[in-house]
Image (cartoon, rainbow, N blue to C red; front, side, top):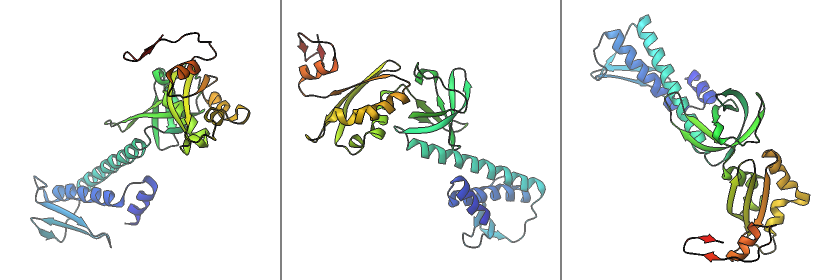
Length: 271
């Protein structure tokens, strides 16, 4: 029981899951030891208080079973397999909850243009070539931040797909850098991005006293400067969102001077 407590702390697997793994393993071992053809009539239970193991065949308790080397080896293999499966579930659940968030890690290796990222020793993430900005140029061991786009269940373990080209990556960076966005005072109404070139982000303030663009730029551009650095110098345009489409389009196309706007609201287009 002390060993199971240690594994629970070290690997983050619930103790009940570990006990069930040992019980399943012992069923396989009993089957080998008594030469049974099936495990249907075999049941093993472990006392959660003292760790004593009780084995039953047709609900009759077996008082003594001589576990040979093969039976013990069978039990060991089942326990290892169950722990590996439980570890995969722990990682899958942890990173599924992080879809839509930013994670940090270090560049572990390169694989056909994809970057394998070590996520603080817990798991490996994949930053596919298509999800890398043209400005990205990472070296092995370098720290990297990326957006968790998707987590898939695979036979080898969960596959964590990362992205640095998603517009939501930039949106999350603004949430981390701008307290007013994090607190919900300033809202990101829309975001458009051409990774490596330019991002346009439309913001709106719920409080008239708070300048939405100024909050995102920061004192002497400090807040937006940190985001530009993270994006390796990609240009960022922050514009005020407006319900007035003409005003909104004019701001979005600034610094170009607009002389005339023709709106086609049905087709959702403007000329």
